[in-house]
Length: 605
Image (cartoon, rainbow, N blue to C red):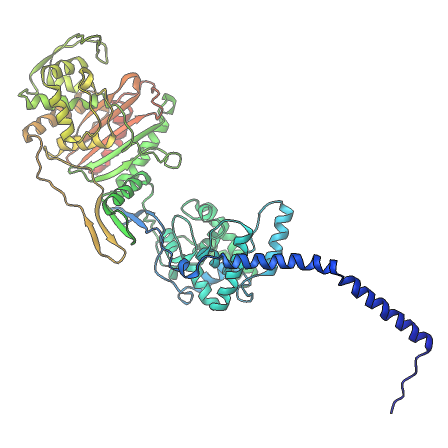
């Protein structure tokens, strides 16, 4: 038995005094005031968390929430032009993807994804410090689970309540699902730019392949897009997409998922298939088709594929030629233009609504109202042919006055007695007005209406000079009747519409039997319009093969046109300025005729 040493009286007194002091300290610490100051914030915090909990969106409703159906516009060769709405694709599970796809995303977005419980305190603290020193929101600390919670149930609004709800939902997701299930939800619902949701839709959109077949560089690009989908997707900027992907690849190296050699090899990899098939441009066309689709189908809840009449090669050539030529004539105050190309029965093969879609989505091919000038004269001469005139009949090109109006020819000369053929090929104003006054202006207007002009036409003496406003697409449509021998046409771009599962819900039904002008009259007028190109104002549009067309220029050079056709295609070209300011000496026989020729010449090669 061990004996304990007895404490001295002094020692016991000291210990007794210390115990009294400790009790007093505790009493002071737990005084009512201190307790109150501690409990009030805690209670407030608990109440606020409770408020966030009870105001969370209904989980079942959020899961079943509908989305805007997608509309995918496709060229006649099967290549995609553009997609509208929220484009989702088939469900992809994590085990179906190459491991480096998962590694790229986790290494960049949430490298401790497999070890945290829905909230990563390390990432959160680092982000807060970064933001504090930056003095702004520079870095986020959300985990993949938190992002799933936000994408599935919440809005992107940056509020404290939303962040608390996001955290509560993240805890619920981690309790309810496995890590693989959470990652599957994330990969199939995350937004990846250009209207695409989910990794499979993005892979198809950007690389024309399944996400199962992505190479390492493509996987890194998709992982890099998660930071800013609109900025880092390869359609917006391949250079920025690759630069961001290099950061992702380095993250994978730092996370021991790939070696430095694998990173270097990935940086050399090509994107997508050997040939890039997606249609470049055609944005104005796609917008127009999308509106037409909505008019045909109305409201719907299923994704659709719209197969169009667009000729990809012709479209891209028309865009390139118009952009090049307008820029070349910028010193003559030419800033914009439009092109519409149809086949003989109204199918739209190309549509260019302006030279820069990013700056202006206004479609000058279908929405702009511009005066056609002399490009309207064929309607006058068609009416004369219908009234019994022949191309060799004569008309006087002499001064005339109608009320206070004293029109002149472009060259300010008078050509005396001329044939109808000569008057049209040289675009003589006075002869044309004299002819129009001899026949019925109402019949001219009726012909214009029947052939496809949809805008108001004033019954005035200046009618024959195209002093009213028209649409570019209407002019192309009207000339297509001359080209096809007199049959009515209606401009159309949609051939068929299918649901995602292949069910046909629309097919264009053409009527090629509605003759609206006599075949002989159409043939005579075509011969006259051939002479416009061969020996008249349209010589700059001359092709190695037979073609017909007409120039058009309005007062003060505000509008310049060339509308013409071969035996296969009809092409209408307009150039001018959106503010209606005059160009410097640009007539229909100069720039528009040259644009028309450069677009149309390769169609026979």
